[in-house]
Image (cartoon, rainbow, N blue to C red; front, side):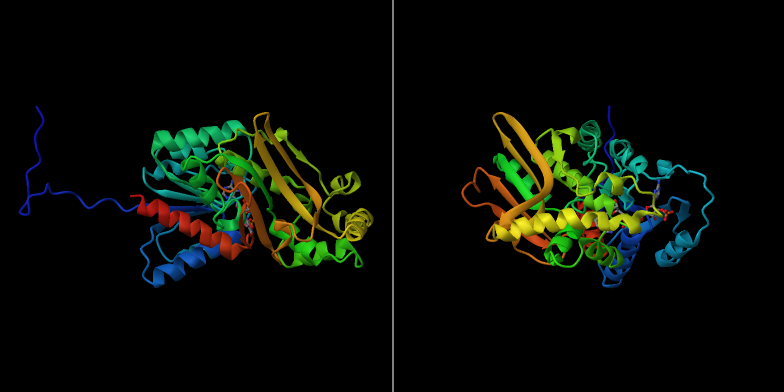
Length: 366
Ligand SMILES: NC(=O)c1ccc[n+]([C@@H]2O[C@H](COP(=O)([O-])OP(=O)(O)OC[C@H]3O[C@@H](n4cnc5c(N)ncnc54)[C@H](OP(=O)(O)O)[C@@H]3O)[C@@H](O)[C@H]2O)c1
């Protein structure tokens, strides 16, 4: 026999106030800092947001009872002791929200485990859905089984409506035929600025100083970052694409790839001659250089590639400027003309905004 709960005066069962979700932020670097600052600004404007429970970086886990900006400072001032620490997620409970603003493979490897415990995960780290296929499939399974939200809109296009559009098209019965795009803000900036006269390496240094590239620009120039984004897009389209199935043409010659950190700057001019040649050939053909990731799905399977392309000036991917991402999606309904999404797709501010949007979506999900 089950006992019915007593009814209160207005005829409903008295219920305890639902426990408020708490927020854990992993990563206190460029994106983590922008995330905390935006969280504080939005909270001051009266937006209901979960409170921080903890902040963590590679140096430790920091309790966040007070002002998160002070704790952030403390975390970033902490000494490195060379001892790896485990993220203690045991203290997080079903419904809490964990934000991954690291680039750590070890952290991404735990997304599925956290989701299966009902912890909602919001990530700028591409290594959850954009690395190994088995890991991405485990994330999808854990999301279903744990009934937990996985917010990954910051991983591609820094929150531009890209993943969302693809998922909504698929949910609406469309098949995605092809996606091609300028998916790297730093490479978009480089090829928007490069004029074939001044050395390419000078633009790379400028981009690095402006914070557009990773501290080691080879990560951008190798195409690895674009491969991960393409994998995330393809998997959102329902295609089980493996990392090795993407043909990646790196811009980094072997002698630059092999350089130690202290030799990197001196060897950057190795980029100059091959890039000048590409530029001159494109210029003679009336084309523009763009670093493009694309996949095409058909009866025979999926073909995917990443690399430098010379495109006609009126090609959909030649618009935009600065660090703009520009992506063309072809599906059953957008067959003749693609759906094109364009806008700033890099930078800490837009990335932090995308993370907060996902937190709010997870929060609204109850
Ligand atoms: N910057 C952008 O514009 C941008 C745009 C889109 C996406 N993203 C992505 O956002 C993520 C963060 O980028 P970022 O530019 O903020 O990087 P970052 O400045 O290098 O910061 C990375 C943070 O992660 C922490 N970390 C590393 N391993 C950790 C671990 N095992 N546990 C906890 N924390 C750990 C680091 O700790 P320490 O400080 O102790 O080393 C650091 O605080 C990356 O995945 C990146 O690809 C960045």
